[in-house]
Each structure stands twice: as structure tokens, then as C-alpha cells.
Length: 612
Image 1 (spheres, rainbow, N blue to C red):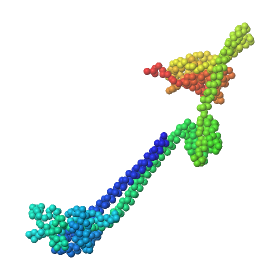
Image 2 (tube, rainbow, N blue to C red; image 1 turned 45 degrees about the vertical axis):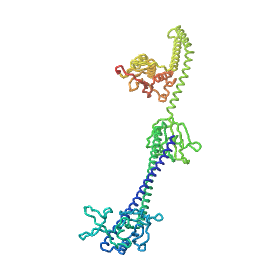
Image 3 (cartoon, rainbow, N blue to C red; image 1 turned 45 degrees about the horizontal axis):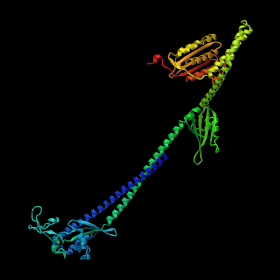
Image 4 (cartoon, rainbow, N blue to C red; image 1 turned 90 degrees about the vertical axis):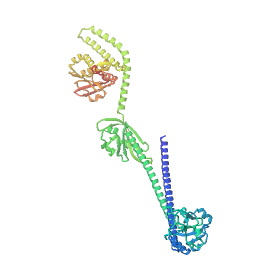
């Protein structure tokens, strides 16, 4: 599903790039078209204004000639030819309403037909200048500006002055002027042009038409150059725009890929760093390049002293041997070994070594995975002990049923026969020894039954200070007989605790008796109770000979004892009682300085005065 989303995202991004490029192309094309049309409009306006100015200049020259009485045809032709001799002017022609040439910058064309009368009528010539473009083979060859020709003057005034008439058509002829005066009649030189008498000149319908033809080539070429420049500019803008869009897309893709790579690296680093296993990675030369916190703790070294160092220099020898074990046939090697770290700890670990190989088959490094099996082995040992206790329980059940009844009979007969002999006699002493041995067997059977009994706890709120003092009364006579002094240090804040008082008393008595028996020459038995934040600790310390360090690991195993007369079940019972309450028991000992057994019981109940 996620892969499909990535594909769709890529397709959408591609369409976005195409769409933005298309929009950019359309925008540039519209701007280019607008620029081309603007250039065309500017050319038309320039040529139209130029033609209109030429016509007005020609009309003014004609009127001036009339005033000087040189407006004859020959003089007009000369003026026309001189005016047409200007640059970019192709021709100047005067035609009548039938389209015949009255005057032309080329005298050879006088009298010919310039254009059909129907075409001339279609142009709707007026006193206002107009223009048209003549094309040949799709190319403009002439830009014509035309209007009705007005070579007319006003009649002389009575004061001898003349006034030229160059007013709109509606104001010519008779009538009043703008100041209320009578309008001056229009006139022209009767010999102004051969074949065009004054009557036709003054007649609005017969008035000649002047055409000025101008060469549009310079403007067309300039427009073509502008078009090429615009096209080139537009192409460059489009290319730059597309390059910008593509670059933006690439930049976004790069940033997205970079972020994805960073997220992937962060995820991988976080995952590897927080795995409950040690990870060590090396490069192809077996130089360590990565190690997580778990592996650092296992080795007991500083990270700075490991990274960048050859594995042979910093790793234990058995790990270095494992590094060289993977082969082409066996790419992953897994072994269980003992890891001696720099702090002196010995850890049981499962170590796996595997080569890091690229898709092309190139060896780029090696990875070690270390799993701490110490806790697993402890759990396995606990299970083994539980199985042993279960076996003892089954044995105890059978012994209790099969042995206790005969032992009771034996004890009864031994007591009876002992009473038949005199006190102090050898036979009386033998009977007493028999009775003591029967009692010892009964005690062993009782301890076996205690080990086999289910850990059923009947908890109730119990005053721990009272419980400790009560349990001490039960062993005080034994302590006095062994010349052992008892001291108590009880925290007044221990208050009450939800425990089974009978089972806790049993555990305490076993600890007291162990401590008293460890001091055959007398000593001090110290009982300490302290209240912590979440636990209450009860310690039993003696000043005896202590426990050898080699025996500390097995001190709570059933039938394990360092005494000549012990059964080895007392401390096993204590541990079972404490663990049944959810607590733990620890032992600290130094030879010739005594031992300290400490019970940690959870769930401290508040004292009465603390309750609200």
C-alpha cells in the first residue's frame, strides 16, 4: 500500500512539472503575441501619421502655390515629384472618383487607372485620413494613406486679405462662421490641374483623392527582428522557467529523499541503539566503526577507546576468534561463550558473527551480535532448583508416611528400655543416644515437609517490631547457652506490614539459629530493621567465622551446608518464605568477621499515626 502511494506521488509530481511548464509556455506565448501585435500596431500608427503628415504638407504646398499663382498642373507635378522623392515613399498619386490618375510621382502613369471605381467606392474616402496595406504573396508591399484632397482657398476679403480654409467639411461653403459672420466662399485656381475644373474641385462628390504609398519593408524587417528577438527571449524564458521548475522539482525530490534518508538513518540508529542486544560493526579491515550502549556495557570499556580501533586490540580473544569464523559456506556463526570484561565480570553470552556483503558480493565489514544469557542461566538455575525442590517434596511425602510411624515406635521403645537401667549407666546413655537420633530424623522429616509444602501465604497486617521481639524470645535460651549476646536496632518507622506472621517467624528463627550456631565460642547477634521508601529490610548479623566465598553461591541450595551437623535445609526454607512474600534475601560475609543475612520485604503499610 505504501509503495503504491509512493508511485502515485511520483506520477502526480511529474504531472505538476508538466502542468507548470505548459502554463509557463502559454504565458510566454501570450506575451509574445501581445508584443507582436503591439509592434504591428505601432508600425501602422507610425506609417499612418507619417502619411497623414505628408498629405497635409502636400495640401499646404498646393495652397501656397495657388496664392502665388503657380498652382498649374506642371507646377503641381513638380511639387508631387519632389515630395515623393523622400526616403521610404514609393509614390504619391491623385485620382478622380473613377480611379484614373490625375497626377502621379511617375509622370508616365498619368491618365492610367490607379484602381477600379468600385474599389475606390469601397474605401469610403472622406476628409479624414485612412490607411490600408497592400500585400503580394502574403507579404506587405505598400502601406497606403489616403483622403480627399483639399487644394481650396477662401475668397479674398474686402480688406484685401485672404484666409485659407482648412476646416471640416460641414463648415465649408455658405453660412455663418463661429463668430456669427458670413462664411467666405471657397475657390481654387481654375487652371489648378488640367482636366479637373474648379467646379469638380468644389463639388464634394467629385473631389479628387490623394494616395501616398510608403515602403513598409524597414518596419517589417524591424518587426521581424523584434519577433526573432521576442521568440529568442521567450524561448530563453521558457527554458529558464522549465529549468527552474525542474530544478525546484529536483530540489524538492532531493530534500524529500534526504529527509527520508535521515529518517531511515535515525530509525535504524534508534532501533539498533535500543535493541536489548549488543551490536558491534567493523569495516573490511576489522576496524570497529559502530558499537551500541549495550555492547559497551558488556565490554566494560569507554566508547572512545573502542571506536576506530582494530577489533584485535580491544575485544576479548574469544570474540576475535569468532570474527574470523564466518566463511562462504557458513555466513553466520553462533556460539555461547564466557565474556570476561574489563570490570572483572564474567558474562555468559551468545555471540553471532556475520559478514556484511553488498549486492555485488563485495565484503565491506562484519557485525557481531551479543546476547547476555546471564539472566537466562539464572532463571534456568532457578527452575532447576524448583525441580529439585519438587523432587524433595515427593521424597518428603513418602518419607513422612513410611518413616515417621516406625520412628515413633522406636523412640517409645528406646525411652522404655532406657528407663530400665540406672542413671549414668552405659546402657542408659545408649538409650538416650537412640532417642536423640530419632528426634534428629523427625526434624529432618519436618524440614523436608516444610520444603515440599506449597507456598501458601496468609497475609495480615502485622506489627514488625512486635514480631521480631516475639521471635527472639523463642531462641533467647539457646543464645544464652551459647554465650551469645542479642542486640536489636529497630527503626521506629517500620510500622505494620502485610505478611504471614507464622512463616516470617519461622524464617527469622532459622536465621537466628544459624547465627548462634556460627558462634560456638560466643559473640553478638544483631537484628536490624529499617524502613525504606518501598521496602522494609530485616538483617541478622553474627560475629562468627563467616562463610567461605566459594560457598556463597550455593548457600541457599537444599542439603548444602558447611556444618558437620546441619541438614542444609534451613536457609532453603528461609529463601522460599521470603520469595513467597515477593521479597529477596541477600548474604554478605567475610571470613573471621561474620555474616549478614538481609531480607527485603515489599509493600510497607503506613503506621496508624500516618493514616488520615
